[in-house]
Structures are given as C-alpha cells and as structure tokens.
Image 1 (cartoon, rainbow, N blue to C red):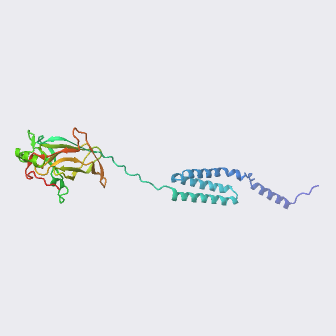
Image 2 (image 1 turned 60 degrees about the horizontal axis):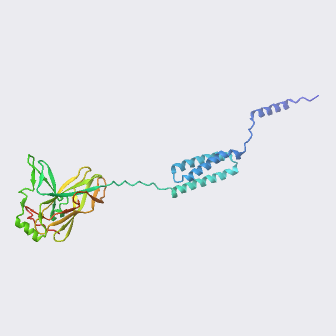
Image 3 (image 1 turned 30 degrees about the vertical axis):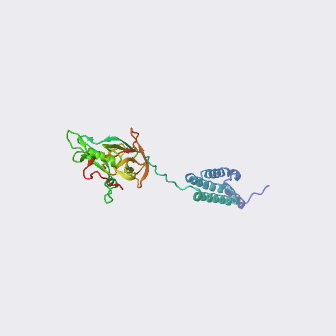
Length: 317
C-alpha cells in the first residue's frame, strides 16, 4: 500500500504546477544567420546606390538613413560579438559619405545669363539736294562737318543730327531753302575743280539704321572720312536709342564747299552698343544692307550748296 503524500508535499506540488502554468513555452529560436539576410541586403543595396549616385545629395542622404535603420535591425538579431563590427562598419560608411560630400560633390553652378543676339544693320543709297519734305513731316540730317562731328566736350549729349521739319500746309518743303544758303556760281564750281581736284555736286546720301535684335539704349558707330588732302579722319557717331521694328532714317549732307572737302565716307565694321538692362557695353558687327550702291561707301565731294555761316570752309583735324 502506497503512502499518501503529506499536506506539505501537496502544497509544494500545487505551487510548482502554478508556476509552470504561468510561464509560456518559449518558441524555438531561429538561426540568427538566416535572420540577418534581409537587413544585410538592405544595407548592401544602400551602399551600392550611394556609391553610384555619390554626386547627388538627394539620393545619398536617404540611403544613409535607410542603412542606419537596417543596421539597428541587424544589431538586434546579431549576437553581441558581431554588433560591434556592425557599428564600426556603419560609422566607416558614414565617414566615407561625408568625405565625398565635402571633397567630391560639385559646388552649385549658376547658369550664365544668356547673351541676347544682336543684329544691327545700316544701309545708304544715293540721293540729292534739294530734298522734298512732305507737309507736317520731318527728316533727320547728319552734317558732314568736322566741328559738328567732333562735338563739344562741354555738351556731350549733343549729336551730329538736326531735325528739319516742314510746316503744316499743302506744299512740300524743298530743302535747303534760300534762307539756308545759296547755290555755287559757275566760277566757284570751276575753282573747286582746280583747287580740290574734285567736282562740286548736289549729292546727299539717304541712310537707314535698323535693329533686328533687342532694344538698344546706346549705339556708337565709327564714321571714316577720307578728305581731298589725302588724310583719313575717324569720328564716333552716337545714335539715339533703337527699338526693334523702328528703323532710324537720316541723310548725310556735307557742309564743305571749298578747300579740303570729304571725298569718301564709310562706316566701320563694328559698333558699340548697350542693351537695355545690361550694365556694360559690347562691341558687335555692324552689318550692311544690300543696296544698289555699297551701303558702307559714300562718295561725296564739294557741296555745290554754300551754307550760311560756315562760308563753305571746313577745318579738319
């Protein structure tokens, strides 16, 4: 006959059974070498992407953040001896990216302001005086006279152009008029031929300056004049601001009737301009319109109209 357990033994057994019921059975531990595959793959992918896109901070920094999160996941799986290696590797990876950011990443480049294309044209053709001006309209005249072309240093904003206006009415204005001067006498015409080795002529030249690019608030073009004394003179002619689609028409008229007179007048190959909104001026080619006569070459000679005041004498440099 078996011996019954004592009350103390029964109490001990009941207490042990209660303890066994309160502790849940632990699941079987999966091998950590398999668990580390996913975070290791994430870290490797981040390193690869960051290496390929090393010059793009917008890619590198997100990859760095994702790799750090994957490393934290990895350290929770790895045994304690491997966690230190994981931290060291992530620190090295971060240090390399910082070095790349400081030494390799290109500095931001400010795109240069596009240079507007400029196209400035001038065209001249034969004309003569008197010039017919319709009622209520006007013409611009550029005087081929040295003192006017040189300008006055005390008045830098005065140019070589005059506006000749016809009064309102029904009649055209034939300019120049008797109030502006007189025609040469036959003896004066013969004297010019002997002294200046040229002829007196009624020639004037009608020119048009056209702008096909952008608005220009400053235009300066060189005017080259060869005189009857075999000398060459160069003057800078300043034009008014030019707006696209609004050509500037003017006449070149000589005031020199006696003595040294202009024989050949031509424009230089470049002009100095300033585009509206730009602080500096630039040099651009001065193109020439295709006319029946070469647009950059003007044959003058003595003016057979003797202008009042100047007496037809021009004093060149």
